[in-house]
Length: 404
Image (cartoon, rainbow, N blue to C red):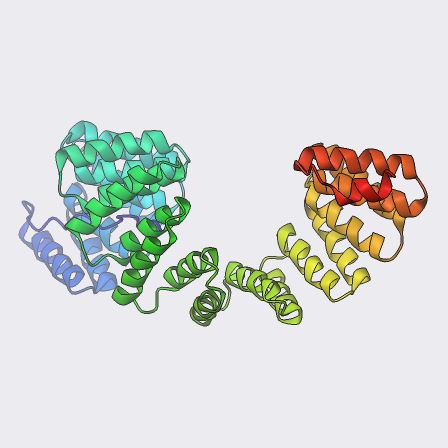
């Protein structure tokens, strides 16, 4: 889970303007410190009315507007502060933060770069610029910025954490683990660092040690839904299905809209031959993620197991509609059609599966069976032999049956 460091720079507390403007300015500052942002803005308005050329008043009013999520107003105030004092690195930094909240990522990067130009030792500016580059999927560029932030501040835990995220995106899981470990050393109470280190260990198939990290994340935050979900993945990979289902249950309890948890729990129920339970979970997952073809495919598998072949065909067809270039969906539909003795329809689906994936030995195997029952013994034998070759099955029972 990414953690953007959008903490605002400390408000400027000094003033050099007239006594009345000074009074409103400092009153605004005190109200902002007390989190009375509306009152602070009212006072800054009066200070600016009396002294419209004070960059600090605009800066602080922008900070209060940012706290109220009035991002456009904040950008306007920071821009005015910059106009009046173009060498204020903090104003560029804060405006960059607000632009990032407005999803103006390129504008934010430009502001962070200007802040760095004015203050080359600003580790936070490098960190935030790196985060935005990562959001734009420039992970290598992000790592370069995180490296610079760490060079400036070797104890900057968030720089190590975010560099770990980018290394993970580049599949450098060992490098990511190293960065998460450093982040944990500097901030041992951050559940996100443990969770993401666990994810990297999962990606390296080190499931047992990944579980240790997820346990720690949950210890630090007992309501950390993603840690339960990820621990469920680890347990499922270790074939600890009941424990995995328990974790998915908890993840769903904490976030009833976690479609992936329903989907994964359905997969495990299917493995345990609880096909009706699996279908129920897949249906809930589809309700949450109606455009995920793989869920329809898996629900089709469970329906096929219950001999609901027509229902399975409908699900495979929906999966194909959503993702027409994935061979597996055609193969699944072919199996259901063959179960209904629609061998010609099955063969058409297997043909398409093979067209999309010429190395799909299973599709050749199943097409061979359908050809055999259709009376095409020569074609059946050819498919059986091709399947045996692709699957490395030197003792193919299908070859023995259909080729003799």
